Image (cartoon, rainbow, N blue to C red; front, side, top):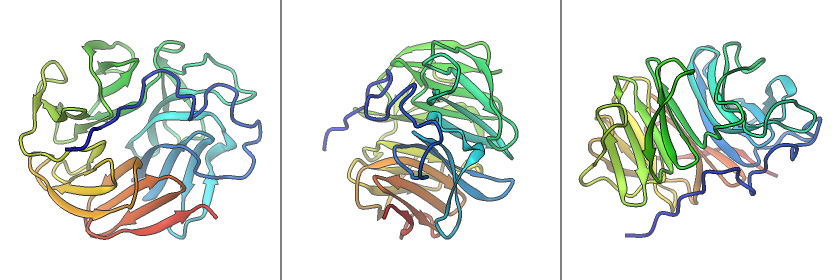
Length: 273
């Protein structure tokens, strides 16, 4: 079994931080994609990147939302035009170096700070039915209102995914393999037989899930991550992942790939020129 290398949980020098993004954002690219999500309001794919929130059209055209160039580290879509995120401000933007938990209810046009400003730097973030899971500073944090948080203790997590069919159930990828909690992160057990994954996501239906191994091999599950089968490949180390029904989207360096057959085959939706 190959080793899974987990990124650190402070500000990521490679991804940049406060003040690294140019004031006007310059040319729109998908440099350093940290999160992907499909908005049910318009069925469009959105990417949280080092240089802002970017909408990706079906033909690969990029549009920066609100021309905001802040660094989105954690990003997740929780409902129509309803997003949660964390990260760092861009050049010319006010705020502490770590934004804590921020929320948008207008499709990313404006954002409001909910909690932990100046404290939390969420590198993994997901929510289900109002229960929010965040990973910051090497610790798993859980909230039911986005304001008050329970600290579940220190863990080494690469990614996490809340189960929409049961918000008390959360999956997490670790160096030791895939683990699951049935009590909102208080206790975890290994998912026996699961592949070694670095990223994972559970679709809104609560049954379909997908994960990506460090080498880009995609695995799919039809029972919420309890059992897995091998699918296609995205050809390299994954940076972000989202699942919406039979659609699976994966960001790799310089590209975003999409599948419409549950992760069996992938085509390029966007590739840097």
